[in-house]
Length: 117
Image (cartoon, rainbow, N blue to C red; front, side, top):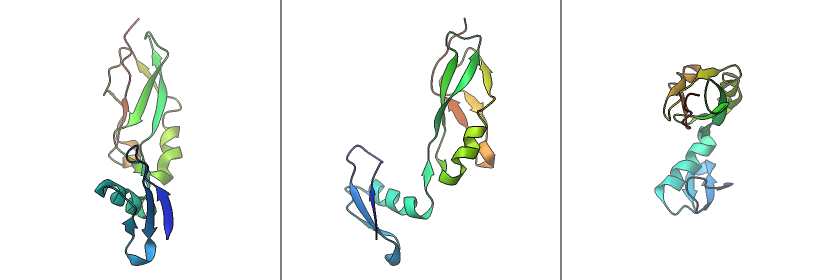
């Protein structure tokens, strides 16, 4: 039995996941908690947030995030893809910064507008 705190919503339900009985979940207040508990033990994933350099903009950096969650084991490899990324201004929320990260079908997208100088 593994105990987790659900991170899907602010409630923070205390979950118990029984690996020996088909990853059944107790302690959740909603179906999202049950899904999170099972997924966290079978295939944990995360949404990544970071920043990239902006050239010619009113700000020097723009925030980015993955368009969907990626396997937890791929986080550092995905972050290395941003090491040398510089994008030209203007930047708009939703702009694709890095397409198809590691062949996962997930993009890094801008989460901050950065106007041109």
